[in-house]
Image (cartoon, rainbow, N blue to C red; front, side, top):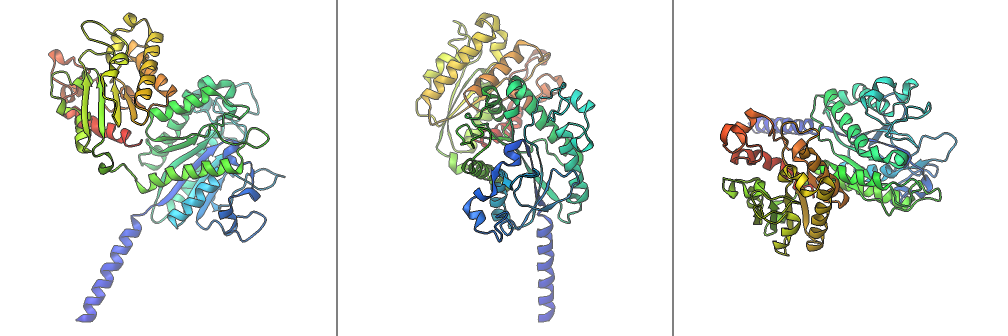
Length: 503
């Protein structure tokens, strides 16, 4: 009888163990960019803690990496044990920031993980159709349609990168017994877009969206929010562009799944292009910290927000029009996290337009809020779209919004400040409403203030009649496109909370 009981316990333990193992898919990282991702720092300058584990004096890395498997620039979709070197014939072995990232990832995971890397120096996002030797990351449909992957003798780096990912999935990742999970997309690039910096925002956004879309289609998993971790270009770089840097900041402010690392003060080698060992190590460490949070699923705990003071200023989105404020997503967010909640919403209020009827604009009346707020949320722009001519045009709107941003930063230097735009509307494209939304994203980006584009990303379809009947306050002929009911606020709470807790 005792033997039978022991046998049963052993079988139960084995079943539990197998189930646990099967629930842990293998971690996968994808990495791409230009020379600072490919690597230009000599291997002899690797961090001492990596060299200390090395069993050789040629690469300084044999023995230092036990788990990392990489497919890099070979076009074959085959993984080999990682060792940091740039694939450049006739040159000494060199490393990039990701060598540090993978080292620390090894310490965290203590198990095999995979990297798909495609990095080529001197490459741009913006395609130059007149260059026969150029290779580009562009996801523009017209470019993708006419170009072949680089591995096929063409010049589309993006296509060759996607081709490599697909082969890695087909040959190896899809055959792993426990499955796999792509954790993040690592990126450093931007120097080669100096001449076409005005297009960088659109081009990078499109490229990231293309990769996310392709991975979703290829795997059948939802990678539409795949974390994208990237760094800015050093301001001492001879090809530094303020427009490129601002574009990166704007994207990071708009997308909570884009994590930007400030490398503006990075040290460079004598070529004024490539990171020193110190700067490459720093970027690698910061990228790892973001990855660690993603892999561990780290979120801000309720007790970290408990007792904090949240002040929200805005229009009827904040005042909640005809329904109680307690029905709003921002009230529910504060209540959920034990925060003190202060509402400065006014029906009809604008960011930039003051009038006797609607009162002072937000760029003036924010001064009414107390000085000791920990969180500041601004919701606006809906009414500004109707009053753009009265304001004086979009440029005047931007000027007054900039005054609001500067005033909030000066008044709340230690607080976390956030902006939310209006919902979408019918005939949004090309409208004054769209101009206001885009202006908010631009100006907030200039001040590194996180802003959420509710018009395009909020999962609130204000232009749809059926949707409004369910999620918006009752109105004559169901015409209200601004004011959510309690059910609508509950729907948006999940989106807003995810955005706010990223920071």
